[in-house]
Each structure stands twice: as C-alpha cells, then as structure tokens.
Image (cartoon, rainbow, N blue to C red; front, side, top):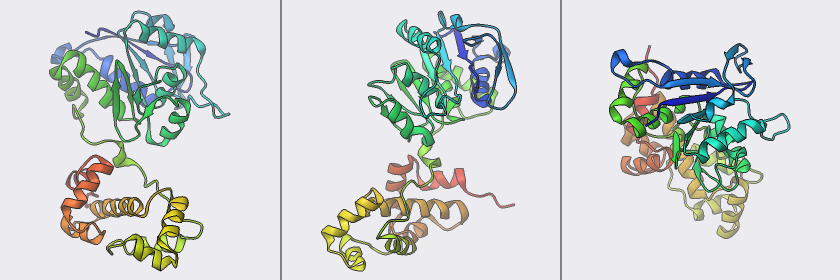
Length: 321
C-alpha cells in the first residue's frame, strides 16, 4: 500500500502537471474520509527551481527523497534539448532506475515519459505520452510500444500518461489500484473530476492524414467534397486517369495510406465537425459523410477514437449561448 510519494521537480517543470501530483497525493483528506500520503517535492539541486510558467518553486529535499518512496512522480518538463536530444541529469536517471529496481511505482506525467526513455525503463513496454510527442518518444525509445491513442498505460508498475489532464486519470488509476475504488472516488470528488474517464486521447488528435499530394491533390480535394459517394479504387483510378494498380501505389506513396483508410479518416473527421457544430441526427450525419448508417459510423468511431458518435457529441458539441 502506497504511503510515501516523491515528485521530482527540475528546471522547466510544467506547473499544471506538478499541481496534479500535489492535488492527488499532497492534500490531507482525512476530514472527508479520503486517503492521505506523505508527499514530498524533491530536486537534484535543492533551492528555488524555475518553472515553465516563469515563476519559481522552492524545493528543500534532494533526490534522496526518492530512495524510500513508494511512488516516484516524474513530472512533465521541457526535457527535449535545443539540439533535439533528451536532456536529463544523470543523477535523475539513476534515482528513477533505483526506485524502479526496488519495486516502487513510477508515474510519469506527459513528457515525463522521455525521462523514462532516457533511463531505459520503457524498453519492451507499452507506454504513451502527449499525442504531439508520440513519434518523438518512439524514436527516443525504439524498443518500446508507444500507443498515442490512450490516456495512460500501466505496464508492470510503470505508468505513463498523455497530455495535461490525462495525468489526473493516471494518478487516480494508481490510487484505485493500490487503495481501491472508494479511495479513488473520494479523491475525485474532492477534485470535482470523474473518477474514471472513457475514451482516449485519439478524440483530441487533429486529423493526421494529408489533404495535399504531389499529383493527386486535386483528386483529394474532390474526394473531401464528395465524401457521401461510394468511392472505390476503380472509380477513383478512372477519375485520376490511371490504372488501378498505379493509382493504388501512387495514392499510398503520396498520402501514406490506402484510399479506403484515407477516406475513413476523412469521413470520421467530417463527422466530428458535424457532431460538434450541428444538431443533425447521427443517422443523417452518417449518410452525409459516406458511412451509410449509424452502425457503420459507430464502428469507425470506436476504432479510431475509442468512443461513440453520441458520446463524442455529448463531450464536444458547442453549447448555444
């Protein structure tokens, strides 16, 4: 059962993520029946530590505070150097490695995953980080399985989380795992957040597939304007005045996807826009974007976004003033 929690603070630390560590583990909740932890901030060089927000935080404890901690929180900070590499103090890496070797939980928030990558702790593990940095993390930890579509990953006492608020989900998961659901709910109630969210960060990702190409840019624009049509490789190849084989090869070369995969993602993206900005029924939107039925659209939303069209609209629909 976790009792002592040490959060590591280094120059450039993200104030919000540091606040998450404090809010979950640093508040005495005995008056409301919640758990209480021995929470400590620590740093390689005790004193005033500059934050990413431009204001300093006073930290008295050194990294020795991690030596007997049940949980070491690796807080997000500007870990990427100007040269593009990972800039982590060797003493920090050693502290994280020692904590993991003796069985402590390691909880990384957002870009904190890069510290774990530099320490070699992500090799052979599934992990995540903010979707904007997922490719960079995969390059930094080539032997890790980076999943950019989830809010957090728990792999054998190493928890990595996606951007910002996903750190709350990861921290509550740790409380739930160690202390049970009632403790997690108690913390969540005090923070006025859901004790467990559904879906993943894929719901927040800007459409990654290109809408421009070298020779097929006009065709891509036309496809986006006519998503409701039943496109096939044959009909698209004829429109591009290419053989089906040449068209399929060139399409993948210029977009990085098959025509079917590209269309599915564009249809999901357009459906997202309509769900956010209109009150049209889900069946109608499914037809407008080319899925044909609500059932087919639900399948693609579940596969791509980890949620349903109805749940997506409930979360993201614009509120009329």
